[in-house]
Amino acid sequence: MQVRLHTRNVSVDERFREMVTSKVGNATRFFDNVGDADVEVNEEQNPRRSQERFRIEVTALAAGQTVRVESAAVSPEAALDQAVDKLEQQLRRLKTRLIQRSRQPKTPLPSAVPTDADDEPEIVRVKQFIMKPMNTEEAVLQLEMLGHDFFFFRNAESDLPSVLYRRRDGAYGLIEPA
Image (cartoon, rainbow, N blue to C red; front, side, top):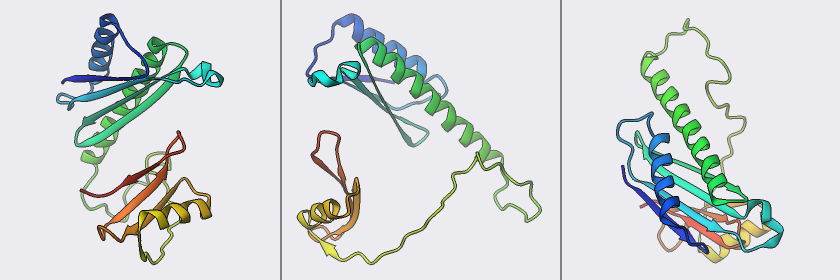
């Protein structure tokens, strides 16, 4: 596994780079072949966020699933420790779910043992709506009008379903299928 370290608004020394490689490598011990991991370190410039000055995001591919965690702390080392703990927790949860899924019968019988509510996520609402094609400017307007953090729409330019979302920095992001 290769660990790629990216920095924004901060410079890190070789000792920290080695620490990142070592800790992220140890956190992925639950899987034999974890894909490359991307670690992004960002220093927040806002003095009001001094308790969350350093933000670390870790993204890795394990068992065909993308695992992403982030943490923020006063120092980059503390943020790294928090991120690694969260990564271990996510990977442990993924491994447990994969094991449980492989041990369950493919077609459950009606008299099967009921599962705990904690095992499976509960869908409490299903919403259906007609998606008229619209450009990204219209989607931004709809997002603002609804007051949501994201908006699902059919992009008129690509004719693909897309998700427009508001980022923490106030800008917008667009997710489209490849």
